[in-house]
Image (cartoon, rainbow, N blue to C red; front, side):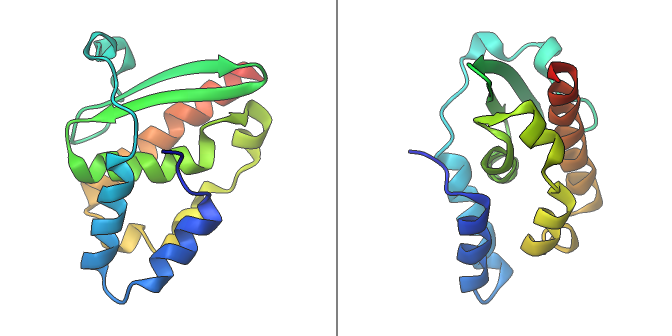
Length: 136
């Protein structure tokens, strides 16, 4: 199943009246991510700064950057899905140009995450942005 676009996710989340329903939606998005092969879950792919374990494996599909991601926490898999909607199957230039802070602000996400989850999310984004900058 392909992830919805960032615009679709923003619109879908606006539909829900409370954050409990929004969390369920985000968790469901995470369930739609393809599983990561256990052999890829190595120290090299582990994102530092996350409370939960998060792994990112970058790849290329022509000009497009691709990412295989996973976490041992279901809510973090959901957060990864939000990030993948913004970054997966995009060019390095598009990733570099995408205003992730504005996207998260539209989602009203940071107010509803614990400080450690918020820091972990920033670490995930920083890791992917660094990969995109390296590819430019």
